[in-house]
Length: 236
Image (cartoon, rainbow, N blue to C red):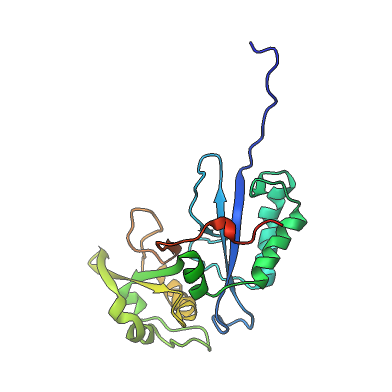
């Protein structure tokens, strides 16, 4: 037995290297405020090179958040981890106040989806899907929607649809929108509303890794020339 054991070292559960806020175009949703998507570059003891991730992305919910809501989520989540050091920033312990300050700076300097693609080599993709027959009966519940019915959405994006059988003789469709496109963030929001209103009634396949069709999925796709994550929002 070693008579002089080394003290135990508590490794952070998460090490945040960089962060970015993506500002969506005005009018993306029904609500009268700008919406943001939060992206972080993290690592941990098991994954020193984790891919960037979209924060607060939940099943069947687009992670579009107004600024006050983004800060509220950070305050109740990651900032709390900073209290006991289970979240660090570039390996350094930070106070919750300092951590939130980094995100406030990122929100103040938010980039557009096109700028995210240009500067970071990342594109935000939203994939929507449903049982086609039932989706075609959908009507919007939003007065501001550019698509009063699913048929209007299909006229705009139908040439991008891919199709596959989903059981019981039914056909499902899938379509992916790249938020770099000027109206894609808005169209994804309203189309997701159309689809989610009808997915359950259609007997849509449950969210699982073996199912090709999903009600909604948002993800990042890396380009070939992403810069070093540490170039974004360095700790002073």
